Amino acid sequence: MKQKKIIPRIFRFFLLTILFIGAILFAVILYFYLSAPIYRFKEPQPFSGEQLYNPYQNMNPEHWQRCNFHVHSQSWLQFADGRKNNEKLIDSIYYKVFEYDHVSISDYQKINLHKQNEATYIPNYEHGYGVTKTHQLSLGARKVLWRDYPIFQTLSMKQHIIDCLKKNCDLVVLAHPLFRNGYKVNEMKYLSGYQGVEVLNNMRESFDHWDMALSNGHRVYIFGDDDAHNILNIKEVGRRFTMVNAADTKRETRLEALEKGNAFGMEIYRYDNHSFEWKADRLREIPTLLLAQLEGDTFTVKASASADSIRFIGQNGKVLFSKKKVKQLSYIIKPTDTYVRAELIFPFETKMFLNPVTRYERDPFERQRTSEINWGLTYVLRSVYVFIIAIAIILLYNKRKKKKRKR
Image (tube, rainbow, N blue to C red; front, top):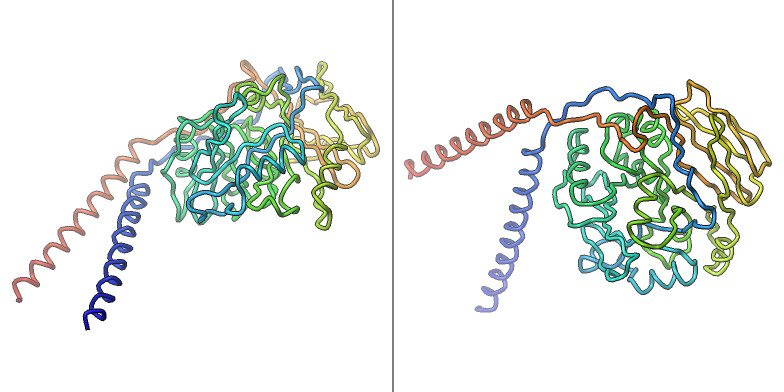
């Protein structure tokens, strides 16, 4: 008899505990939404000016480093996706087998401290825990941001997260924008304050997002990452990466190169039935960028191997010029071209995507800001929320009071 009473008590205890935790989480999330500021967005301006900024002007072809800034390890008691990976396994495959120069582990909402005492260490994590997969990579992170809008996100909320992240990291990169439509293409027209777009990701490729940002004057650069959750799966690793032009392996040097655009995205075609050793051989043979030079208004790119095609892309993602079976190609930038970026397609679908040459007037490193918090509207909306909550509390209190009187 006693045993029967104990079991319901234990069940009730666990149920109450779950309800209590759920109530706290609901309250926190509700607070995030009710306190979210409203932004005022102005119309962005495409790149303009007489001068042209080439992110590769000081590039040294001997200094290319193969990097991956998005891979997951075991975390959060193995509940987070990435449970099959651990730091030792990540090192053995990326560094020893594939000969990468740098791998930055990006666990969900957690800065991985692996190799934290080395000069090459870049603290990083993937921010975001919502159903829409509106995520960001936080490179050079100093602490984790726990604020998020997990159920839905307006344009103002997305801008607010970018601004909050920027306060505690060196570079904000929008992760896999197309995945679950986490960022709508048209939103890229207005969002600002970030430095990179993860255009190449195993989940999705987001070229329309990148070209929308560039076409509206946002100087943001390409990232390519595996976003591997199971590195024992040959389909997930060694496919997409970022080539960084850095004179040394220090954190500051690599981050500066990324911020200034002295990097490019690379993609290797996925062959499902090959071994890790075969892919490692492929990676050793991939072409490299020898030249991306701007002389006057002539932009010239040259690779170490002949490309099936080289093409130059401009405003609104339009193909400006292309040629097949070439190793080197030049394009004369017209006064109407706001930006020009190059794509090189090699045999076996190996692809190289360069950052753009952009117009500027005064400072080539100045980034356009298209939003600011509308404090007037924000306080009005918060006052409305407070009023509604107060009315709800009063109504609930009066309802309980009436019930007590009836008793």
